[in-house]
Image (cartoon, rainbow, N blue to C red):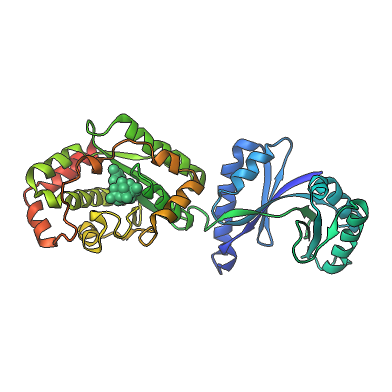
Length: 381
Ligand code: ATP
Ligand code: MG
């Protein structure tokens, strides 16, 4: 039996002239991702990526990985056979017998991309459906709400038989949307924000601010663990670690307490922008969420980003916490995010942070600091 994985392209098919380039990127991402699981012949035809194992491959692991690759709408493990109605029937019986034995109702759905095939899609479905009904006598045909659907696709090179497709990761292939710098804390939100931006085809570089000795080694390791989990969707993610203690102490000692958080944020933004420019990143990404905490009011966000010119993307801005948690669970970051290690912001939280900071007051407060020195010291160390 010729086991194969079919990956249907998502939004790429809507691309005009750039389609080839998107497809090339997707194929190279898939090749890299599947490398640990064996040797494959991977090619694209008719908006589908074909993944043919060459010799022994770990097909289960490949199928699981296939569902995490952005740019793919659906994933199906299928059996390939000759484009002949009896070969197709035999393949359906061999390949899907367990599912057919289990189901009570079924139908056959055929698609014929190769119009030279001598039967119409309906004729082929009726033929295979009728024969399967004879062989698995318990099965009742149900065209509207079947428990199991046998899919047949007659394409250019072969016919493919499979059960229901699995949902793909959607989005666009990583790398087609350029590079961005994502501010990754150890919380629930920023890993989800990173995932959402990566899904639009963006390669991410994570940056994290830590405050030894106020924050622990475990807090840093937690962020690395989060980046590690995100790698299966986002590709390589090596976290850039920035020491933040000195800056926080300077702010605490020289600025009004109520403005501490927003000034801290502005430093994060400035440093992030420098690092982003060094790495050719076109935007900054954060997990900010409107109204969630004092630093996330419209006024505070606007003052936070006033000191940078790169665009700041905040994909979670209008999400409810529950919606964010649902995604965190789905992508596997939630359990790590809730480990109780302090983040640098929580350590230096003022009693009463200002929810509507005024820019002129903030600029005034910042004039007590040597901004340039603080930034370059943090980046160099
Ligand atoms: P999260 O769950 O992502 O930590 P949060 O709701 O706790 O978010 P804040 O702590 O106010 O919100 O942080 C807002 C955003 O600022 C974060 O989503 C993240 O993008 C960025 N950020 C906060 N702390 C850090 C940090 N130590 N290192 C890097 N980025 C950070
Ligand atoms: Mg946080």
